[in-house]
Image 1 (cartoon, one colour):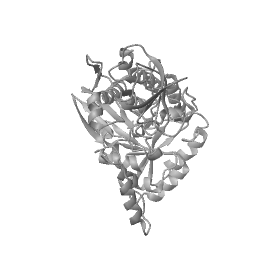
Image 2 (cartoon, helix red, strand yellow; image 1 turned 180 degrees about the horizontal axis):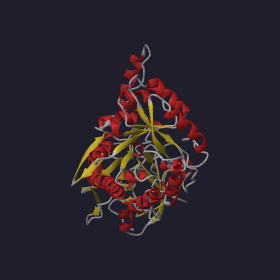
Image 3 (cartoon, helix red, strand yellow; image 1 turned 30 degrees about the horizontal axis):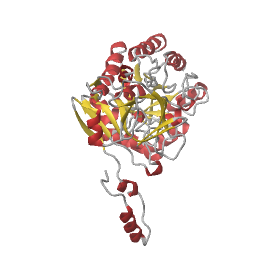
Image 4 (cartoon, rainbow, N blue to C red; image 1 turned 135 degrees about the horizontal axis):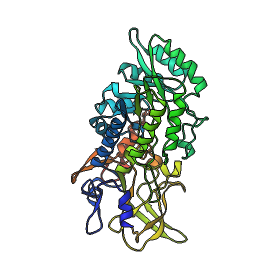
Amino acid sequence: MASALVDLMPPGTTVDADGVARVGGCRIDDVAAGAGTPVLVVAEDALRARAREYVDGLAARWPRSRVVFASKAFPCTAVQRVMVEEGLGLDVAGGGEIITALKAGADPASLVLHGNAKLDEEIALAVEHRLGLVVVDNGDDVDRLESAIPRGRSVDVLVRVIPGVTADTHASVLTGHDDSKFGLAPEHAAPLIARIEASPVLRMRGLHSHVGSQILSTEPFADAVAAVARLGEFPVYDLGGGLGARYTWADDRPSVSQYLDTLVDAARAHLPPEAEIVIEPGRSMVAESTCTLYRVVTVKRGARTFVAVDGGMGDNLEVALYDQRFEAGVVGRFEGATSACDVVGRHCESGDVLVSGAPLVDPAVGDLLVVPATGAYCYTMSNNYNGNRRIPVVFARAGSWRVVVRRETWDDLLARDVDWPGDDAGRAGARGTRPTGSLT
């Protein structure tokens, strides 16, 4: 079991003689002691290596190409900064991701803005900062863009097309099927393309398509290329992302190399050779670089064994929303006789389950638990349910670690409250009942 669990941990993970894993060269029990739990631990070298694998692999197969990281998978400024430093652009799906991308040092020209319902303020940000591409999802996007662009300026756009491809994945992360809320069917995209080509302030650069997330076969990607090619020849084709990550011992995902081979073979068959190809990996870029550490709070043995930890759906909604399977292990006891345990969170929901039937070795209160492959969408969807404080992010590299996102404090939870007249007494009362100890 030890080797199987370690195989799901960030690449480069090793295990000391006492059974404690090292991520980025750091003992994870030391990270937990210093940063507290729950905590997301990113192996920075593994993150960088995956970014280079994508950039170098695509460039070797199709020289006129760009890789842009789908920021929504892990919209942490430090993660975006790593991507920028490794030569990637950034896919941003809203105003907040634009702001963090700019803080991360991204060249605005390397940003690609998405969204099926872009707000006026987001379009204004895109125009103000001269983002490289805006993916037009509908005619309303065109209306807002044309009204926001000042005289003498223009904006490059792609039109998002529904490829009519139904991939084998959870319905909530399926985007390329005929009933998708994203993009336009080809028969509706064609007149919008003609309108953009006639616009004095928009430049029609090409097409965008996306089939979904956590795709564990390559065929849907090739099918989507063939579908968008039927709309004609353009300078740019953004083929989206969607390659799945390995979460469990049973997952058999294609390698990045296999994914790129399939995509480029389809491009050679259907797209003009002089076109630029853009891809937007997200989940497969970050999921496997990261693990989450928890502390066991209570163990209840009965008809089922429940191992409750100090986190849960506040820091990992993937299970409750998408039925995503994860694995877990007791740090220091990866080997030995296991029993099936339900690793559950501390939130007031029966659906707050992290891992059902996890094979754990004699879990006990105070144990450190590790859940691998939590780099994608866990930070993204972290929340304050039950007054939960969102958890920190740690980068580990070459035997040292640093906090790149701090844990929220009790004061953070109150920071957006707007006080009413006479609230001084209430605040004083709240201070009097505030939990003792560190607010970090």
